[in-house]
Amino acid sequence: MLEELRAALGPAGCLTGSDIPEAARSDASRSGRALPLALLRPASVSDVSAALAICHRHGVTVVPQGGMTGLAGGANPDPASVALSLARLSGVEAIDGESMAMVVRAGTVLEQAQKAAEDAGFLLPIDLGARGSCQIGGNIATNAGGLRVIRDGMTRDNLLGIEVVLADGTVLTQLTKVVKNNTGYDLRHLFAGSEGTLGVITRAVIRLRPLPGPRRTALAALPDFAAVLRLLQMARAQLPGLSAFEAMWRDYFAFSQSLLPYTLFSDPPPFAVILEAPDDPAFDTLLEQAFDEGVILDALIAQSLTDARRFWTVREGLAMDTALPDHINLDISLATHRLDEFACRCRSDLLARFPGAYVSFYGHIADSNLHVTVSVPGGGEAAAHEVDAIVYGIVRDFDGSISAEHGVGVLKRDWLGHSRSPAELAAMRAIKAALDPAGIMNPGKLLPAAVPPGGGAP
Image (cartoon, rainbow, N blue to C red; front, side, top):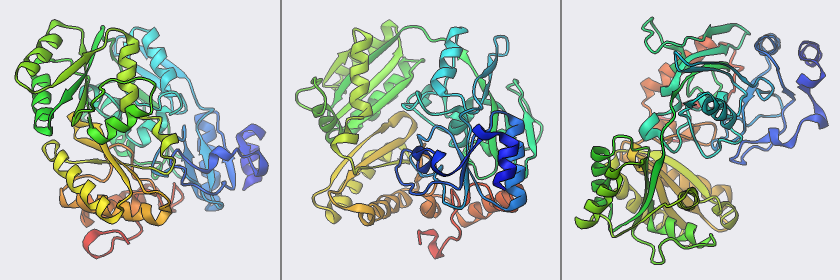
């Protein structure tokens, strides 16, 4: 099989042994341990097709890999599988100004695609913190969310067309640029969020938007969660171009701020909210009204891009990776009005089990997405599993989703029954069996092998 792959892809397209980089072991979750049998690096769609046909004929499993920025272990290989990297299949093929669409190869780094769109006078509306290393194919395969979903939607909401190579090497090409296409089953949405379990995404058509004008950014201090909900209601009504509404609970804001060389609020408030919207007098009017009504206690308005970047740096909390190297970052979704109720119960239950743990919350409140940050000193994998059980158990009680934007991968696979019914899981398995009957595409990811009674984790 390896000889066939080398012949089909060339020496640069099939790496084995010590030539496989260590980065192929794991995505950003750092949960992967093994190097694959080989790392395939196809440079064209025909290369991908040939590689999958060879692996399919030999019954060897394939793990697609993008920028390796995922947090669910979805791109982690095992020693008996081959990993298939899309890094060489990159570049923007076309930008259609009339259709406001971009044809892009799957291995293109998101930031490079964003820059190409901007140079052409458009906005590529997909945006997330890993923009400098994540790839378009991975964004689609995981249906990535990000910072401005409130305005632009998830990745699948911006996907017009797609090209995918199936497990046996068959190429499905539907690179349409039209918004309206009511011709039966929508394959682009089937593969968006499939996490490489149904095929390998090779090209896509992304919908573009007009470039936004100057933006205003503010960091507001609020007294309670009721005020957060009231401010969100006001912002939605008065700021039609609202592009971000991010909330941080006190514990998260205080700790993240303490790791930085500057202070925004010397007395961390119960809640801190970042608002972002077009530069318009309505922005200041909203803040004044919210202050007069007691909805906000204080507000900082960015006077420069540097100021705005400081607000976002606290929200992104990247310094926590060093301060809490063992921290667990879970992302869940549930009804917006219940997010604080969930946070209170979650904090209480986690601290009851792990009295010395660090627990905090932040999230994209406008799209009902909450991130839970937990650090159990010296806890290891056993503690991480208990944290998952506690948090996802509460998510199930609140009728929420165990994954808002990180995907399922392997780390959330066994908890999928907390958010999906047995009938839904059976339908997913039927789709998997139809498109990948030999089961070679990213096995062990996304779908649990079996759901125990009650739909819980094994």
